Image 1 (cartoon, helix red, strand yellow):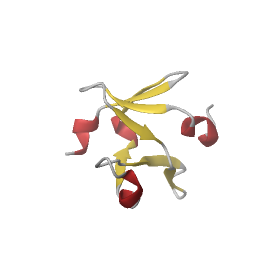
Image 2 (cartoon, one colour):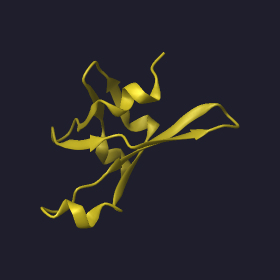
Image 3 (cartoon, helix red, strand yellow):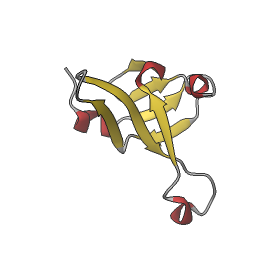
Length: 80
């Protein structure tokens, strides 16, 4: 079993581009079904990251392909 706090320390990488998307800031859990629905990552859209803090990437749990010791590999194109 993995703790939510351990997920936050890992870099999230898109397997299609190799791009680092960021680190997890939140996890969405369906309490009725007892399962994780998705993860939230802050999106840095420009050089001036300070002004874009409210923009986030939501990834479905199904888009996660592998959770390793240092990184989480995701298929970001599944979100479209």
